[in-house]
Image (cartoon, rainbow, N blue to C red; front, side):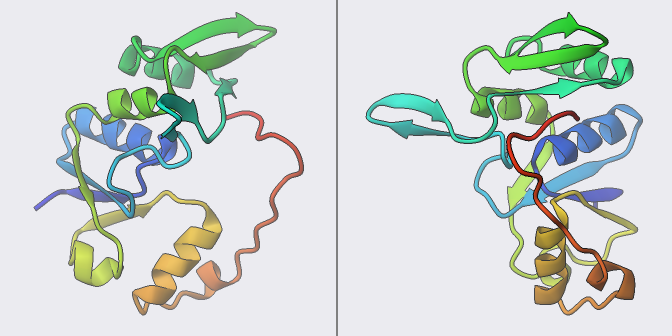
Length: 161
């Protein structure tokens, strides 16, 4: 049994899982998709790989930037600009997710959190708030703090990590 189950295989979940794993925890990553990545996704359209999520991202924390460069050197390119690191994909978002997931125990699940994951000492939910609320609801988990979360999408492109 894993020490920690990380729910969500987007960049937050994969990064957390890698950090925990590097610090000695046994970690299992679960997600609703058949492959890791979350919004770091690509699809094949007319024979070409097309990124369907963001085409890059920015990081302001030097430690986070260093970790990402160390974990995904073949998939990410990085340029320091004005105190932030601008990351872009060398080939595709899917390649970044695959590189971040290397060595992690990943499996597709998530119809019902309690049924699919079972009882573990630590479970971390990394998806955006609306998805966490849906997962909790489907799993019969009621929590006043979780129910009180509101979520507004910012207009325009996502900025910063």
